[in-house]
Length: 337
View (cartoon, helix red, strand yellow):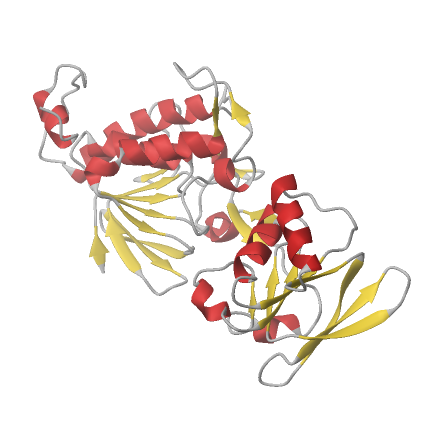
C-alpha cells in the first residue's frame, strides 16, 4: 500500500493546482484520474476553446492551461495514476484508505476530491455482443498503438479522436472509418488527409450507417453495419475502436456517505471540508452558499483546503503562512535559488 500526505481525485486544473499548493507546504500527493491524461474537462471537452478568467492571462486554451499547470508542478515529482477510478474508500483511524479498479491501494490522512462534475466514461456501443470483447478486441481508447499493428480495424465516430486515430493507425493497418452521418466534425486538415488516403485505398469510409452486430466467438471476425437506406454490409474486422464521446458520472463517490446536494458535495467555506473529517471537495463538484463555478474559484478553494491538509498531515508542526516571494523554504521546494 502506497502512503502519502494527500490523495487527489481528479487531474483537471483544480486538481493540478492542488499539487502545487500542497507541494509548497512540503506535502506529498498522488493524483488519480479516470481519463488517460491530465487536464479534465479542459482537455476532453474544449482543448482549443479560449478561457478568459485566469488572472494575469488574458486568453489561453484548455490545453495551454493544462500544460502550464503541469510545468508548474514539475518540481514536486508527483505520481499520477491515470486510466484509474477510485472504487472504495474506508477510514482507518486518522487515515483514509482508497482502493482503485486497478487493485492499487493508497493511504493518506487527506483526500481532495477535485472531480469536476464527475468522472468521464466512454459512451459505449449498445449492441449486445460488445461487452464480451472489451479490452481484448474492442476499445474506447488507445493505450498502446503497437497492439493495433497489421490488423483490420473498424473505427466508429466522427470527431477528432476517430479521425486522428484513423490517420495514425492507417500507417500500418487497414482502416474502416464508420460514421452515422455523412459530415465529420473533426479538423478540416485531418479530414482532407483521410480523403487522400481513401483515394489511395488505405482507408475505407462508410457513411451514413451504424453498427448492427459483431460476429465472432472468442475473437472478432467481422461486423455488420446498417446504412440509413436499410442496406447492410459485412466487414472483415479484427479490432473495433469506438469514439462516441464521453458521459459524466459521479460514480462511487455518491456512495461514500458525503452530504450530497443533487450531484454536488456540500462543504464548509472555511476550508472546503465535507462532513467527513479529512475529505475535501473543491472545484465544480463542491457546493456552498455563494459558490461560483469558475476555475479561479477552484484555485482559491484548494489553497484553503491545503492548509487544513497540512494540519492533519503534520499534527505536531505549527502551520506558518509564508509568501512565496519571500520564503526561502518555498523557493527551495520549487528548485529556485
